[in-house]
Image (cartoon, rainbow, N blue to C red; front, top):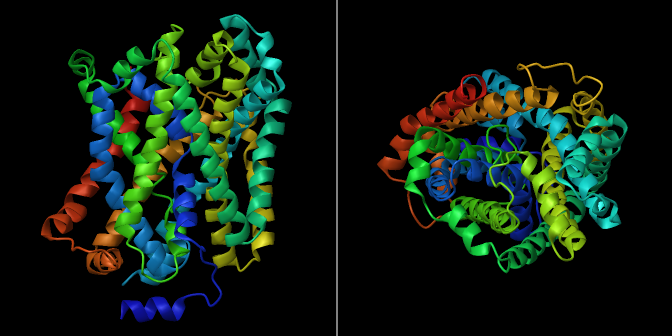
Length: 470
């Protein structure tokens, strides 16, 4: 009965992805972003390296894999965006589930409202290294002032923010297969090549061994000092790294044609490649930091202040700085294109726009909605929404990361396990297609009762770390 419902309501001319590689690269492109190449290394440095990495792997399997599998299953079965798929597949209360989906889907728009600004900083630094303008700075103070001048100038930040928006819009104006799939596939291939080159260079530095020990060798002394925080930080990173909860991954499941591919295998592949980039970023950053005596616990400033100081001291530093920020920019741009595609799919499916008009509408809207984040570092710098030292970006990130993502993930889990939603029987039937195995009683019990509790813990920790952690 469920299959008949899905087939009968499926759009007649919905686009599909041409190749498995295209699906994998688009999905990984959405997952790989600043959370991997920016947030993961500095959080890993903050919590002592090895034990954090080990816990991160464990929580990816416990939390990331089942929720990712749910999103892809909903997408493939519903053949629509998150809102449309929830409405089609719900056994009862279609309007209620569509309402939930619409609420959490807004997270994609909010994410782009600040992600484009941070991505613009990366584009700006790539430009600075390619042009060589940043090489005139020699001291830590000058390098720090370089970043402050970038964020403090709304005109400069606006230009580079618009660059990312315009490129994302242009790529999404074309067809799914010939433009979006092909462009992201090439960008991701370039990203992996750049990562391999950078890792190779980092591992030949004098501090490579010390950096690897700090990064990957577990230290009980460091872990025991912040055991609870490390556990929750690894749990949160395992969830947030895949951008789960707002339908970002669900849309790519909807572009799969037929049920010949095993969603279990595809989910594992996506997680493995996403993790390779995260681990690889650390392999670049920590040997470089320890070679040139830069604090690997430098926090978010690690990317824009500490690492440029490293590149200034390296032989051919301009080249390696350009390659590093090109790598970062590629990671950011693939996420922009992937999330734009999700929003555009909603406009096409629900509002019946053509792809080109939907892309132009989304691009224009995101450009306007991103202005508060740009102004939050200059014209509106006095606005501190979450307390002293915070800005518009912090508020937007808090709404998305600490609210919409975990609660949206919880909604997806309930939808796939509750009878009033899609139901566990239908979810498992979809997930088992082309999978040489079966999900037993433990998986059913875990996803229905244990997994929601873990997601709630992620949600609670987000509030604790924001408002109560020292």
